[in-house]
Image (cartoon, rainbow, N blue to C red; front, side, top):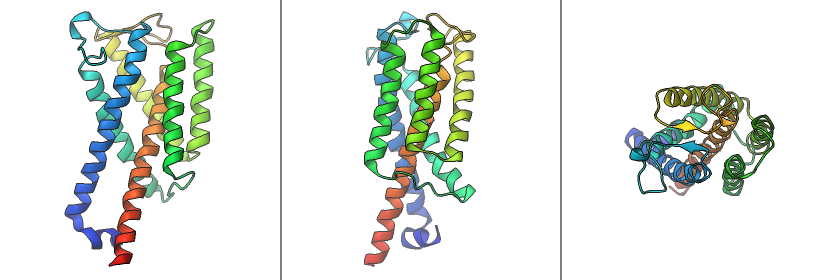
Length: 214
């Protein structure tokens, strides 16, 4: 980090951090709008009619919360990697990150579009797909631990929101939500973590190239 700070200074470092956070926020907002539309169209999630906006049939707070979470997760993953002294180098290229996003969208699509015999079968299938996503695109202990933590915390928040009538799920089978929801949050955490790692690596590579030219 010292070499990077010498090139750009603390002020530029903070600006780049803010830029990455903003970019991650926008990615999170976009994914939230698209994926929430799938859930709403299939009546998996139900919002009170008076809170829906015309934009992708989403309540205003959904993209805002998801964008904020995406920014936090995307910045946290590379930070934890540095803290543990385990730089993540597995499949570090943009093509791999884009495939990870595609698989994540596919998992969400399966939860909304594919008809299974029961919720248990769907949950087990999505759990296997989510673990497969981690194994294919991450394979780090930090990624696995953060993914599990994100899934637990996000599911808890969803339970509280549904309990307070903010929205609801059809056919809940895990208290107030669907049992496959933690799988979605786990896969989403892995996906945004990989995007955040790649953005930081791209930034560091650009600074290294600049220092070499100078």
